[in-house]
Image (cartoon, rainbow, N blue to C red; front, side, top):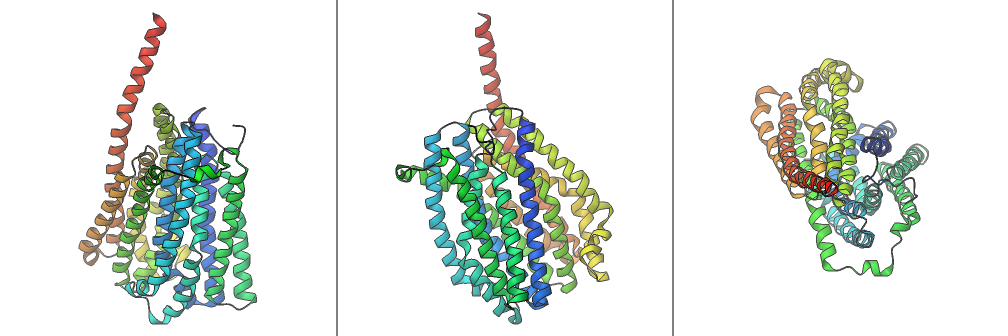
Length: 458
C-alpha cells in the first residue's frame, strides 16, 4: 500500500514505526487537553464562576457517557487492526461496515438515555440548585449532539487501526481553532450563556468528524460496497464482544473516580479545589504513557492478526521505554516540586498545602499507571477485552475501599493512596495476563523457526 499515512506495523523496525505513529498521537491528546482547559477558561472569564462551575460539574457525566463510546470505538478498532495485519481485507471491510452500523445504533441509544436521565443524574451528584439551570441548558445541547463525538471517536479509531495518527491530529487542530473562535464569538460578542459554549463544542466536533470521514473516503481499502453492509450476525457479535468490555471498563473507572470526588466534596471547598488541581496534573502527566498505550494497542493488534508475536514483544519494550522516560521526568516534578505545581493553579494557602500532600504520593507511584496503560492495551490488542474490564472493576473497588477507610484519618492523602492502590492492582492483573497470553505464542514461534532451520540443513 503506497499511502504514506497508513502504517503497516507488521513490517519494518518496530521502534521507528511506533515513534512515527506515537508523535502525532501524542500531539493530538495533548492538544485536546489544552483545548479543554482554554475552553473552560473562556467560559469562566466570560460568564463568571457560576457558569464555570456548571460546565465543570457536567464533566464527570460527560466522561461517563463519552468514555463508554470511546471504549466501544477502541474495541472495534482492535478487530479492524487485526484484520488489516492479517491482510484479510474483505473481513476488514465487513467489520468497518458493521462498526458504522453499530455506532449509529449506539448513538441513538446513548443520546436518548442521556437526555432523559440528565436531571436525575445531576441530582444524584448533589448539584447545587443555583447551578441546575445552567447545567441543564449546557447538558441538553452537549448530549443532544452526542452523535458528533461518537462519530469522531469511531472514525478516528478506524484510522488509528490502519496506523494513521496524522489525520486525527489534523482534525483536532482544525476543530480546536474553530471551537475557540466560536466560544469567544458566542460568549463575548453575542452575549450567549453556557449554551453558546455547548453549541460551539458540537459544531467543532462536527468539523473534526468531517475531516476524519473525508480521509477514510480517500483510502481505497476502505471504499465500502453495499454488500459489505450485509453482515452476518457473527460480525456484530464479534464487534460487540470486543467493544462492550472496553466500554464498560471506561465507565466503571469513571464511576470509581466519581465516588472519590463525592467523598472529597464532603470535606469542603479547599479539598475540592486542591483535588481538582491535582486531577488536572494527573491527567496531564499520564498523557505521554497513555498515548504509548494507544500506540501499543494498534501495534499489537496488527501484529497479533499477522501472528508476528515476536514483534509484539519488541513493541512492548519500546512503549514501556516511553512510559519510563515520562515517569522519570514528570514523576520527579510531582515529588520534588509539588508546591510549585500547586501554586500555578491555586492561590489559597490551604488548597496549596493539601495539593502538596497529594502530588508526591502519586509522583512516586505514577509509574504503575504508566506501565498499566501499555500492558492493558497489549492485552486488548491481542484480543482479550474481558480481563481489562475486570481490572477496571478492581480499580473501582480499590478506590472506594481505600477512600472510605482512610479519608477520615489521613485526609486528602487517602485520595492519593486510593489512586495508587487502583493503579497497582490493575497493573498486576494486566501484566500477568499479558505474559500468559504472549509467552506460549513465543514458544510456538521459536519452535517453528527451529524447524525451518532444520529443514534447510537437510
